[in-house]
Image 1 (cartoon, one colour):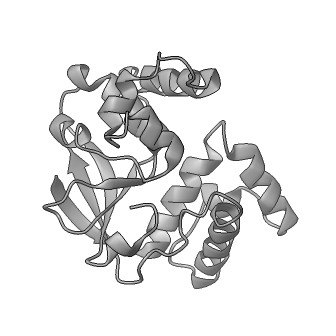
Image 2 (cartoon, one colour; image 1 turned 45 degrees about the horizontal axis):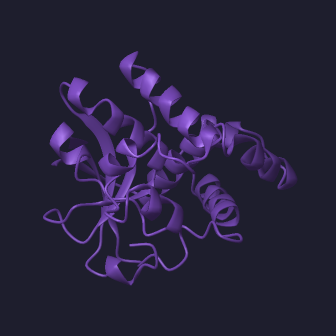
Image 3 (cartoon, rainbow, N blue to C red; image 1 turned 60 degrees about the horizontal axis):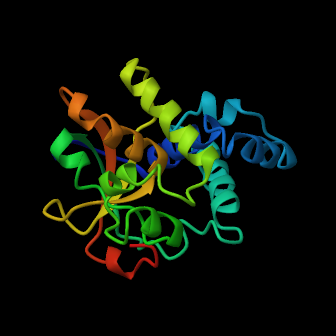
Length: 200
């Protein structure tokens, strides 16, 4: 991985929400939450990370959205994470690991490697809607559409990162890995305490 620059938590949160609001799986649910709280999509689509009030609202929206029931992605994340933008080569993408969540672990054949998950999409028992979503995303990659950056976590730059947000996109990139030329931009958060996170 090639580190580019350090970024702030509000920038990461905005990137996360932009990915969710553009996702067929999560968009309607997130839009409903925004409406319930009295906001519209512009809070995300035209978000201003220099506005502290906006940042606080987006953080609360994200925690409500992802900290309910079994979608507790942010529960227990250590507070010392330092976020950076980074470039991922095809070799880097092949090392991306799914979070320690049963569905993704099972898809990867217990290796937790996204590239193994991509190779297992056609096996019996994998949800057809998920397979179709991954294949549609892979098609967008081939067509060179701009996709939200995958968000990753790692203990250090020497460790293979775990996906926080972007499992569908990571798997789709793996489907196209032999056709990749150049790099893609991603976000990675480093913390020496990341192993305390439940899904790491």
